[in-house]
Length: 338
Image (cartoon, rainbow, N blue to C red; front, side, top):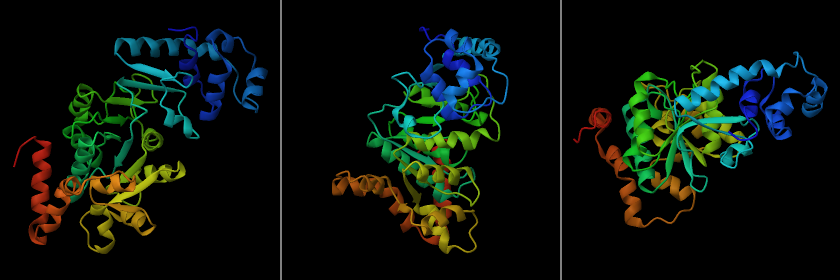
């Protein structure tokens, strides 16, 4: 531990401060003793407002010490705002976390990430498309960042792993408290394949309803562009889309969800995705479409290969398309070759 000691962990635990105010505290002090010994008046000058609660930072030292001990015990790393290893794209948002915890690796700042998110209850076509796009991005060396939720998130992570990429997820819990528990084996695969689990929440923190919208801003911040595969009108995926737009990122919708604009009796709620498409979001049918959006040069034959899964689904007769896509999705979940 450097001369900053527990300073950044204490700042992360202080209640009543906004994200920008915590960053100001990180930048204003170099050692924990300096901040602890500071008066309330000096803190008010730093954050340019009056404190609403008594200034007693010393009481959070034991909590920060426990966080540090748990992180070491559970092999959890952490980087603070002042660390050179802090992900540079997080520095560009209004509300970056003062501390980012991680297991495995942090994303390579020199490589692009694509965020892929969507509903926990996807249609078979959407689940297959999320997998295929993420896999083909992985084959091009592009990693996916998602939220490890059931459904689209998990399919995107699995596909990206199949494509040989290092995959990343941002959790709404501590990185040692993988939620949902059904995806713990997937989380282990991500770590075993050189990816990482990331979170702004300290070790031992459980998931809460409010932590998921908060974590979505980090998914969009880490990504160069975000693909919404399928989403209802009120969903975490649409929160991610709005945050992506606020951050100036590319926002796309997958064709499996965008087509719902014409499906009045759709079995799956894709109205949120359809609305994004109506509002002008680009429609993505394959990984090749994302590469074209970035003006990457793709050989014609390779472009066709990346689009194979999408074209296969289009060629299947309507009466058997659902069954084929469902079988493909189940096979991927079970690692079975059809």
